Image (cartoon, rainbow, N blue to C red; front, side, top):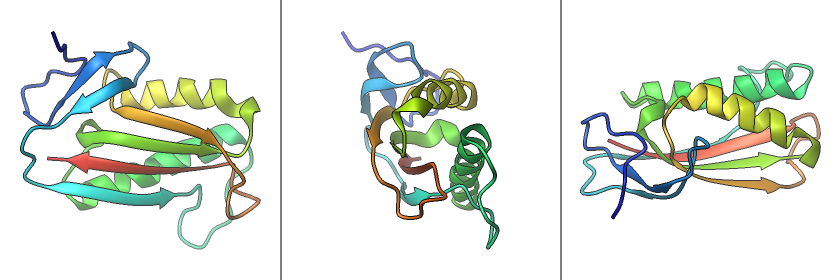
Length: 132
């Protein structure tokens, strides 16, 4: 039987087989009215250089995701799929801690990949899909 890790009564969707670690193995959305595809969000604000250190960059990238969601009248709880691209394996634990903090009890499907990022100064990039 499917269980919901985030049952807020909105009907946006629910985690299927939630992991308890701020992600779900699968996330079911039934008949969404709106679907938002968010391009890779990088750790820059405007034309500024990225901040120093992974933690600051991670928080800024998540803030950029939240900004795109807000522009579509959505919040982080509308996320159904998130892709996180890290430039170093060494940042996995900090990435997980920040993601867990930011998402709270919400558990979208998540994929994390170690890659070479487009700009060498960026330590991560986050893309996402949200439904309302």
